Length: 230
Image (cartoon, one colour):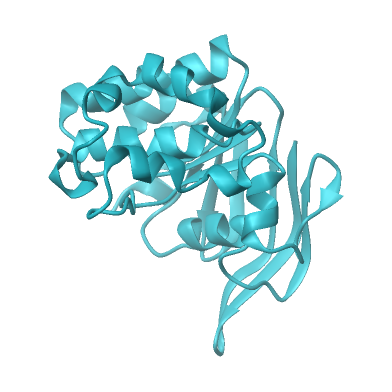
């Protein structure tokens, strides 16, 4: 579904992504891994059109989208949950959910599905986003992405700063979306047990390059020590 070929990206004079390759198979959950600062979030922002790229291809369902703007990429069916959630704290839950409607393929048709996944959001529609707990804000961020009815859902460290019981719930939701509904997922995650629980495949980045990619059951101790352990 998503194929990235020889992608290069620069921050000023700093070469951040180096001829990067990544393949995300339709219907699977792929976990993007690596130490802090290796380019994971940069790559996701490049996929979404939030950062410019210098060369290479970003193919979504066979179409090179590298020169499309972020709004167009979202309307093609890519949902994005950024690191740190980035909800609008002064807007209500309902207003946060409606933010993505201009890029949505189905309008408000997804709302009942979002409320089925996250009943707390329905109960808090009139509450401001900034008044929610961290876990509730993460649910809101995921719900906002699902309003688009995406065929690819991208999540950047969805368990960061979340209490353990909500981490478990988010894992259940990702598995349901991926395994039961068939939504393709690209996930950045640092927690190894969580990654092993929800992902089918992994891809490890180091210094802006892919250094390993395989089925998740092949994520062995040597790879963890070499590329993931701080």
